[in-house]
Image 1 (spheres, rainbow, N blue to C red):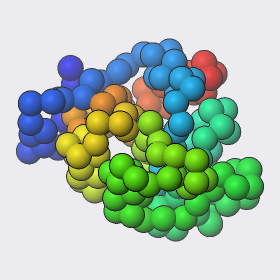
Image 2 (image 1 turned 135 degrees about the vertical axis):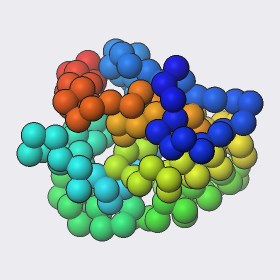
Image 3 (image 1 turned 180 degrees about the vertical axis):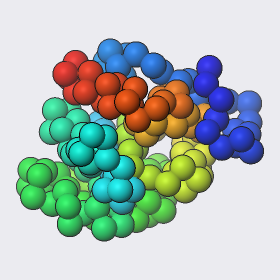
Length: 176
């Protein structure tokens, strides 16, 4: 089990699992659950050998055919790279609130999501969103694809170097 990236992040009795094998995450993402991928604005700032994290997340979204929510200014970068009707612009707080609303009918009007995948967010900001989802829902499984361990996500990556993170993301996309 990886240590939380934020030392003061004490999540309570239920802690998520750090997954270091891309095959395991790929199998979760291939699951037929209704999924939403939430891409944060930090995905435009993080580059791995010249490729933005947003581009890795776009590749993942296109392979698993899910709805995509962009937070902050990420929408302008992503809007031409995701198929029509699958991309939405919303704040992290707003999508978190909706995921915690049992009666929300989803972005497509066909029901609540069973899985929320996060990537490209500030560590302390997404940690609180993941905590809210973990503590106030029992229907949404969360996965965080950032290079930090998030004990509030059901599944996250261990704390990785940029090189290991790049290898993980490339392998994950290949396995999808």
